Image (cartoon, rainbow, N blue to C red; front, side, top):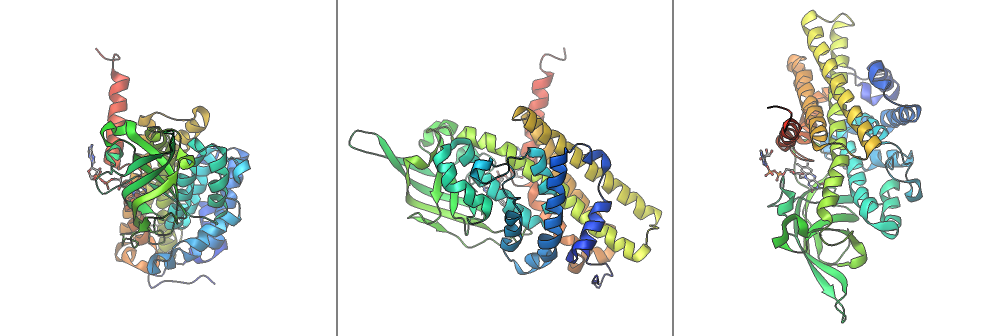
Length: 418
Ligand SMILES: Cc1cc2nc3c(=O)[nH]c(=O)nc-3n(C[C@H](O)[C@H](O)[C@H](O)COP(=O)(O)OP(=O)(O)OC[C@H]3O[C@@H](n4cnc5c(N)ncnc54)[C@H](O)[C@@H]3O)c2cc1C
């Protein structure tokens, strides 16, 4: 039997069959047409795992601040945690489109689980991109099978939107012949997802603070490396099933073999990584919107049946259109990334800003359309609202995305108008 809340809404996400029926009814054929058969299969399988193992515990994870270990492990067991990882490292080498579709599904069921899930990929990607086969073999399979947690450490107390201002210092150590054998890393990182428990940290530091971007270098740091310590998980507005913590490094030794690429090549890794991470954030925006919309529909159906009052139906029509716009933008940019290996900063910025703003706006509207009942925690909608907020902040704030879009527009207009 489907349970009910004081608001009278069915807790459909506690029951896999009810979850699958409702979300299946919300599919949009025009967006599905953009998926190839394999991408549809990934989406279908992800939704099944989400319905069974991810969505049912989402409310409790939020309420009790429980790290999304079980739900992430379920996704890893189903072979869904390495979609962008080559098969030789335990992944399935799927398309960015498949990854985006899976991220949307996971987020619709439990946004916090999606944050843990995407962070695993964000930690694996720089190692795959610049680590070479030995480091990839050593670290990536564990991130894919769920036996290791990973973090990506860029942000510092004095370096957020301007990541190139980072001050964590990597001092080279040399042998008698002057050859670099390793580094001692000192500094602090803040707001690091999964930072309280990560077994592996991809840490960005500078080998020369005067060199700006040209000094930035990336390293793989073991979670138990000497001199690495962590702050307690931070208390946040939302995403309570994902942890966020400070990291402190005090002359932490890192062998030269754990440097990703050459000295000064870290900025290129940051730039390449944000293409993937902004796909993740944008997919979260669409998934958050769909999750909030689904919850609102379930609650309204309980009160009104299928005949919704026109004012309510009009609001829902707007929301449905916004979700579809977000999904089409997400899938379009993801397809371009698959086709060309990248997309312009303007397109990535448009996607990230558009989709995460839609996540927030739909969550706000879905709460509002229910009146006072929308405020009830039991209904699960206000959780989407709280979880949506941070997607407009991380992976480059939406103000910074607007700057990138404006720059891209100015570049396009150069010479086009007289
Ligand atoms: C829950 C959570 C998880 C996170 N996880 C990670 C992680 O795993 N790894 C990691 O490295 N970081 C992580 N971050 C950090 C995140 O990437 C930064 O918060 C983000 O880059 C913004 O930096 P900031 O917070 O220092 O804001 P600031 O850069 O200080 O910006 C403050 C305000 O000024 C605006 N602003 C800044 N520059 C401009 C400009 N040029 N023009 C107009 N407006 C501007 C911003 O939009 C913002 O509104 C996380 C953050 C949160 C909240």
